[in-house]
Amino acid sequence: MVGICESLMFAHKSGLDASQLIPLLSQGGAKSWWLENCGMPMMRKDYEPGFQVDLFVKDLGLALDECRRMNLSVAGTAQAYQLYTILMAQGKGKKGIHCLIQALEDLNRCEIPKYQ
Image (cartoon, rainbow, N blue to C red; front, side, top):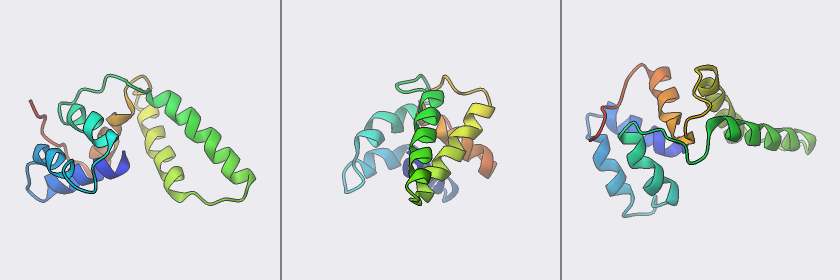
């Protein structure tokens, strides 16, 4: 999810039409279920949950606790946890996890235009 969001942010900041990125990436090695099922809802600003942010934060927290117990470094998971915690703090816990794009838009002070 982080990769999808960052790709869309990169496309937008580069002056590309971010909505064209999803069909393009879906053709190659970046093809994934997440891209195909969350990419366009993300572009339409449709954040209805498939899986809610608050449940994901709980699960990530459990995973991080277990990794700490095993002395296992999982920097990417820790970063995702922090980004999703931002969404929780903004009152978006009941939204779908693909609303992660909103946290990155806020951090970068830019907004990807809504795709119809």
